[in-house]
Image (tube, rainbow, N blue to C red):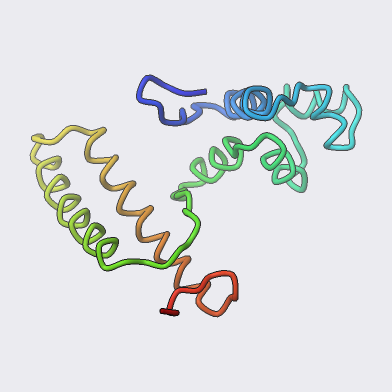
Length: 157
């Protein structure tokens, strides 16, 4: 489900998170509830109870998220526990312009935060820039982690 800005909605309840994930499974992957039941290896009543009562076993949540193609339930639970959730982009060799863009966004984020705390900056704009900076940092963090892995050739010319 998408809001007017085209960005994924943040669920306000666990039930809504399950609904959003199931809606994404149907829309993006053409997986109706019956197919989800089969892929999760359970019967209709068990799956329906898990979703309607919001009591899916923790060991099944990742499987559910992968099959749905979205992780609203997992993200909702993490956020409810006070954790920050940032989607990590796939890594590729960074260019100097990428680092310059990240540095520019850091500056913009600090400026907007200062304006926000004085009541002169929009909440959504401030959050958007902060999320962009966090995403860029997460991207570079993953690149650093993967330098020893053969699928990511960061430092070859």
